[in-house]
Structures are given as structure tokens and as C-alpha cells.
Amino acid sequence: METDVTIPLVSIIIPAYNVESYIEETILSVKNQTLSNWELIVVDDGSTDNTYSVICKAVDSIRQNVTILQQENRGLSAARNAGMEKASGMYIYFLDSDDRLTKNALSVLYTLAKQYELDAVFFSATAFADDLQAAGSEKATKKRIVEYERYCDRGVENLQISSGREAFTAMINNNNYVPSVPFTLYKHSLLEDKHFVDGILFEDNPFTMEILLDAKRVGIINEKLYERRIRADSIMQIGVFDYVKRFESRFIISEVLRKKLVSIQDDDTLYSALEKLYREFVRMSIEDYQILLDKKIEDRIHLNEYNLSRIGITQFQVWYNDLVTDLHRQIGLLQKEKEIAETQSNEARVELSRIKKTYTYRVGLKITAIPRWLRRKFK
Image 1 (cartoon, rainbow, N blue to C red):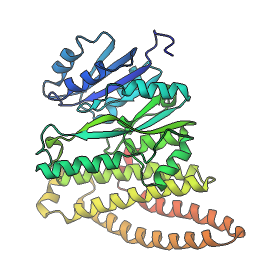
Image 2 (image 1 turned 180 degrees about the vertical axis):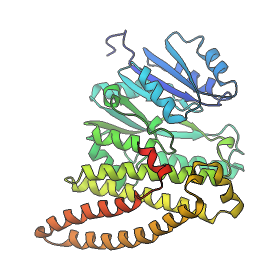
Image 3 (image 1 turned 90 degrees about the vertical axis):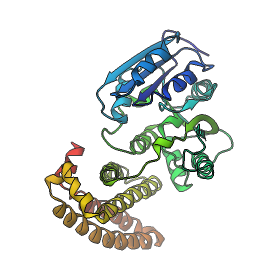
């Protein structure tokens, strides 16, 4: 039951950047919600098109609490963080600026969260395309929609309630970990000491991990309450600078995960799940940089425009090649030790703990021997 009407039930945060063609429809999906007593916070992240004007026009007829923030272009994480600072609702929801909510989405989520005293509610999504040529052809677009909906599937038939750590472990082990922030409703108090890592890609990953590890009670449903837009202009050629950013981002996330591993040594089940995610980010960061090394010489020369030039591409290659060679060798050896220890009797548990710490320390030590330009990201 809706209690204090002076406090919004849900704060909806929409970060927006150059989405003049989509933001009005997104805001309309909020306006049409069956849940009443919400607040809307739209953060214009330095758009260079008419996004801000469209936002102002779209919210003009909304008889709710509406806040429009403008800032210099600082990226998705900074825009979401700015929105969180202004949020006053009992729950917080992040909506992407080119997508839509189903009409009853917030009502369903809020009702579940209140009824079962949940810190977070995870749900599913569907996908759509305004243009069936968005992915290059009608066949490719339809395939992308099917693949996306399969990816979003939560793998549950009915509401599942557990601790956040139990949910995280199950998601990782069942291969249905979907770290997409717009597919979750959060209790405001859970986010009071949380923020999105600034200046990186894949920012939803460390944020979702932190939420799940801290939440006492979470709910998971498979109801499709979100509509993801497949856009033609979001499918683009990946260039050399994109690979640099991807490598940098995945590396930073792997470091966040490594530090978290050190703090959960006593929980074997959780440790194993988080270790699996950590290794995946290490693997992907290595793959990204290998692609970067394979780029044409003229592309690599253009990297001088990037901060990477401070250490010189040759030094970076030396560091990377040494990292990969030693990292692969150590991961292989340590994993064999770990597998052997796991099959031994109870007296081997002390040895298993030692190997876990050694794995984290030795692999972590090697991968944190990074150039200064990247090390500064952690400060």
C-alpha cells in the first residue's frame, strides 16, 4: 500500500546523450506507468544535438516531480551517479534513454519489493527494432532480437527469493548472469554507498556484483518488463581506440574483482563463482590487447593521440608480452594445483586455502604491474 505520498515510491534516472530521436518515447513510457507517485530525473550528458530541447518538451505535461540536469559530457557512469545524488525515492530505477518500460513495469516491481521486503528485484526484457535493417538485414536483425531475448532470460518460472550472494553464485554457475542495470529495481538504502566506476565501458558489471554481494534479500522474476531497442547507429565498426578503451575497461574491472576476491576468502562457494567471473575479464582484456597489437602499423601510430603514448607503444608491447607469457603459465599451474587440492581429503583444506591466496596474489601481482597511465585509474 502506498504510504507517505510526499516521498516518491520510485526515482527513475535516465542518462541521455545525443538521443533526440528516442528520448521522447522513453519519457512517454515513464509517463504512462500505472504506478503513481514517482519522480523522474533526466541527466543530459553534454548532448550536441537537440536532446535537451526534446527532454524539456517531453516532460512539460508530466504532473510529477521532474528534475532535468545538464553536465559536460562525462559518460554514462557519471550521469547515473549525478542522478543518484538527486534521487529521493524509496527505490531507484535506471532507464536507458532509447528504450522503453512496459506500462505496468514499476507497479509490478514496487509491489514485489514492498511485499517481500526485497533489496533488489531482477527481471527480464524483450527487444524490438524500428528498422528491420538495423543489423544490416532483416534476417540479421531478427536473429539479434532472438539472441538478446535469450540472453535476458532469467531461467526461473516463478519468483525466486534468496540472499544476494546466493543469487550471484547461482547466476554465475547457471550461466544466466545478466549484469544489465536497467533490468533491476533497487532499494535506495542499498545504493547509499555505491557508485558506478567512472570513465569505463561495461560499468554495469562491477556495480551489479557489488549489489548482489551486499544485498540481504533479492527477488528474481522472468517477466519481460523492459523493451530494448536495436539501433542501426549502435552497430558500428570497432576501431583501434575502441579496443584500447575496451582493454582498459576490462582490465580495471578485473582489478575490482581481484580485490573483492581477497575479501571473501572464507566463502568457498562464493569465491569460486567470483573467481570464474574474474578469469573471464582477464581473458577478455588479454584478447582485446592482442587484437590491438595485431592492428596495422599506421593505426598503432595514431595511438600517440591517446594517453597511451606516454609510455610508448614499444614499452607497452614489452609489458604486455611479458604479462601474457607469465600469466598463462601461472594460471595453468595454479589451476592444476587447485583442482588436485579440491579432490583431496579434509586435511587438504588448509593447502587449498593457501593455493587460493597464492592464485589471487601471484596472478593479481603480475596483472597489476601496469603502466602508470592505467594505474592512475584506480586512484
